[in-house]
Length: 433
Image 1 (cartoon, helix red, strand yellow):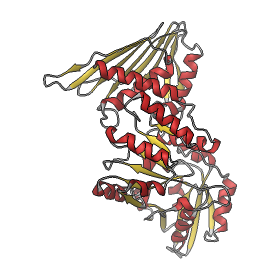
Image 2 (tube, helix red, strand yellow; image 1 turned 135 degrees about the vertical axis):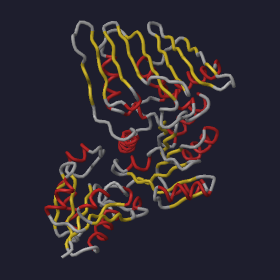
Image 3 (cartoon, one colour; image 1 turned 120 degrees about the vertical axis):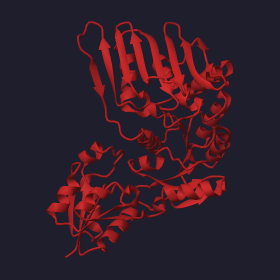
Image 4 (tube, one colour; image 1 turned 90 degrees about the vertical axis):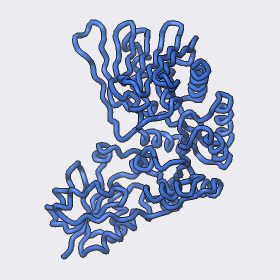
């Protein structure tokens, strides 16, 4: 008898789940289905799971395809299950291709292609899975496709690019359903669009998506002027959709807690915020505007919008190419400095100084999962640590799903007036630089 095992969360049970169970069943004589527990989902960074474990098990049972259902409760359980149940074949989705190859020492591992177009599937009166698309001009996805797998209720299906080969290559690489180079047709089949193309083309895609009633995630900055950004926000509100900029820092629990604590006088009156960031270290090298926006965002969230003066001190090499800048943002009783470099060595760090101590986020602070507080008069550092998985994109998607559920048109993690202020500061930097 050939035994097969497969695993999944099976939240908001849809035809994609049914198909993988059915295809796994066809590979053997006896099928075991492992359903992840709530605690294990939290541990592995799965967000926004809506159905209870009991309901998810019942949905699998109703397929009448599983001979046995077990609960997956911890990392590494698959090896023990394969040995315990004398498994011949492990079945997983192709989006995890290669990740479970180490288990080939114990059994055959089969990666099944994912089911297309699951977003149109009704979920027993509970709504639909939101279909997402990507607008791009290269084949990098910024981990958007992979991160979306950790958020229930969303599914990346299609890609648009003006260049046919780019669209085709992106579609093939990330195993999406379809590629398009007609933007209106592309938009007609999705609910949420992530726009990650070059800055000069970004605005036209954002405006058209909002006009067609789509929720929009955009790389930063979403517009070239504060006036245009205000216009986009007004238009999104009129169409009862949301425009969110991809500043994942503000969606991280650690950063949210840090802001709350420093505003609650953790280190006394705030005197200084110092951010250092390297373009080369930031996601493999980003344009200046996109890189510095993360630092400006952090400063605004900590010190507020009411800055008095912005100055820049850009340094170029002998060929006139930018290599380094020290930006200062003056407040009435505090000073923010942003150190940004490209080919020069900049030590990534954020330091917040108050009248009664300091808070430090070392290394890649824009992906923070923890920070340290050094309070005057204490002999020890207090460390605050929070779950952080992936590159932070899943937390943005989770917040977007909450906004859609609550029918909110403004993000409370980064208010519209904060986004506009960020762009005003960026505009000043570029004009003075």
